[in-house]
Image (tube, rainbow, N blue to C red; front, side, top):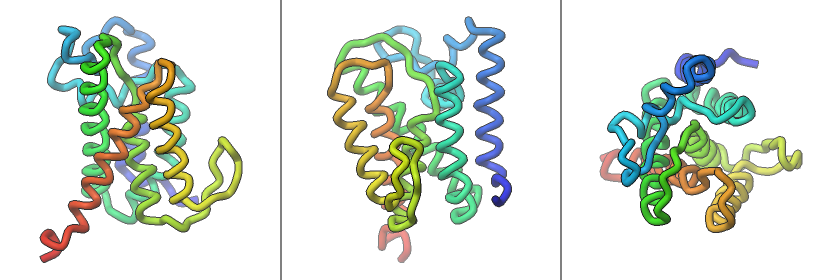
Length: 193
């Protein structure tokens, strides 16, 4: 197994470090969570800082597993600069969609986690390696990456309109949207010309 590239490793360490820090100082997390615009607690750095916070150990574990599964490969293909751009675009677009969603439904609950960025990486992996066979944890069935992405995207859409579960399904879709838009921009004929 190749070693983790630098940006993937740094992001994993930053998330793990933030998790440990906010276990010790939980009251400080308030300033870094993504608060809805109407809550009165929104601050300009939160659309980035929320991605380093996680609700519990399982939340952190599954996000870091996704980062390990898809991030390392994408960073090796794209290099650190372009890979960082896709992480930031996915994180910001996930935040934007989540802020819009919380505004529409009128909730004041904060959002945390790197899931939006991970879903952006998932979509990127599916676009770059559509026919690569992967075996997800749930369900443990070998399938092509493009089908895996379509299934997870569809599930997020269905679950987003379902009963509230405390999971930011629309942030996940927002992360996918940001990655898709950036990859489309990179592939546009005008950019190549």
